[in-house]
Length: 382
Image 1 (cartoon, rainbow, N blue to C red):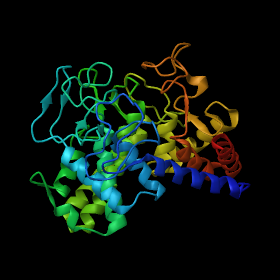
Image 2: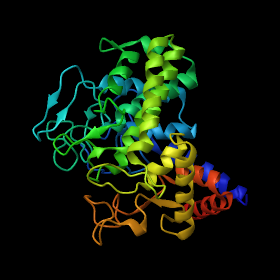
Image 3: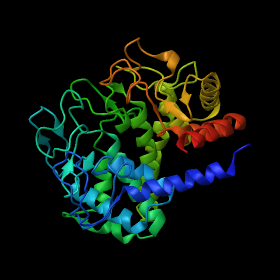
């Protein structure tokens, strides 16, 4: 492989710097005018926001969970944010909002303000009853429930601290809160696949929150698959053997169902079975990354990703489009239905979010393509 070691070192340093700039320490007040009601961290813990400086002045559950794979979040920082998330979890009763949206019992917030108030829907810094609705769904995004579980899994792996899972948070143990969070997103009992309708739509994945998707959902189901494996490990480590077996069985069911529901002859997995039933570049790469595909289905997906990279219809300077440039739904939209104009934000722009997943796929498919993409991405970030 022909990867410049200096470029890899640069990316490592860049990641460290971004995480450093993303920390908001206890009692720290953001000096910039970021248009939010709360600018001072009064939670008593260090919070990590999605990007440094003036980016997103709150704590996002999914972004923190994804950050954990960098290895740059300390165990104490993770413990604080894990417990804050548990404290912010919805209680045993649903919350009916003014927008006709509903926060289900034990749902996990989308993000948490600097004063600890939970916000359950994208697109707002309001923690009140004006959240959600037509644009961002009638129930909170599904992915945060699974990312909460990933946070707990990483904490156990990092700390070996089993006792935290028995600590009562508002009268309910952390372990029980994980079980309840797992059960929040609606799923098909036969396949284990996450499903939503137009009437009760929830966001599939936070980085698709500006995309209108219905039916069986690929990305949320992949996260559900990964969460089952995390819960299996957590339960095994805590001596909950029967629960571990149940999660293992559920993981097998989801893994079997993913290709049956979403695979296509092209090698790409479709994003949904309803609105926005289109090839999902990020979802296909992520499925490979978490080993949700096997055999011929996996090989076809690897070939599709490599062919798309080599033909220039998927990436720009190492950043990845959610939809291939050749697969736009129309001249006005990449996705079938999205909030942003074409080639903006989540409707055809290029993101670094999925670059690591595509790196992983290309490393398995074609190491020359892998090296080329890593070098391109490094140069674009420099």
